[in-house]
Picture (cartoon, helix red, strand yellow):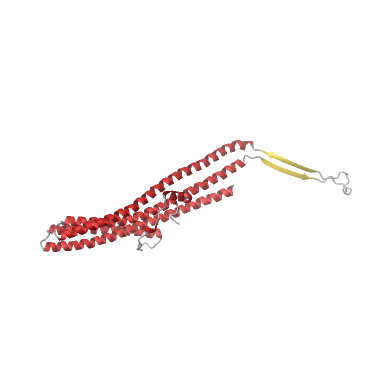
Length: 320
């Protein structure tokens, strides 16, 4: 029993190592998507800066022609400054996240990581029940509890074995010379054989082991109850992650529509501003809405990718 129990405990320790591997994999993925968010935001902000620079030149030209007031020029300059500050903040975040990813991957801390845009289209979503079934088969916590249940069972068997009686069997063989002569006649030996068996029972152990058996059974029952609790918690976790992933995917579709609408609105306001029938504020607002929608879309794509891996992590298969 001791050897089998030790083997099971070794398997439990291995599952702990597997769980740590899952956590590390998820930490790398999480940081990867965080860096992707920052880099995509930086690209959109760069486009915004380029656009606002063009708008500033146009407003300055209109001012020189007396079409707009100096206030319009100042508004575009202020918008340019605000976007530049945003760009600085994004760059600062990029450096921090890039450093963190270097540490996680064991790279030189001065390494600049180039991010390839994740392909979210290849992530096929299964049904909720499929993910729950995967978790029931793969989650380390459940496997550990199964092993602990086996260990508790072996412990119970070991204790029960101590309550059984000890049986001893023995045999003795003798040579006897019935003639009394120092040198007995040929074939005058007697060979009596005695065979005996004894049964011993430690009465004190009967009472002690009775209590130990009760404790061992309670421990095994507690493991079963704990598995039921963990199973329910995992189902709740998977359902939450599944719904979050579905929401993230649907947000992408809505944001793609909003970009089309924001682009149309921006083009309309650009035309109106050129014809001096829209104010600088309206022009800036339209452009801000467009680039904010673009940033939101990139963030939503990253969120959807991360939500997928969060769901996969909850099934215990993220590192496969």
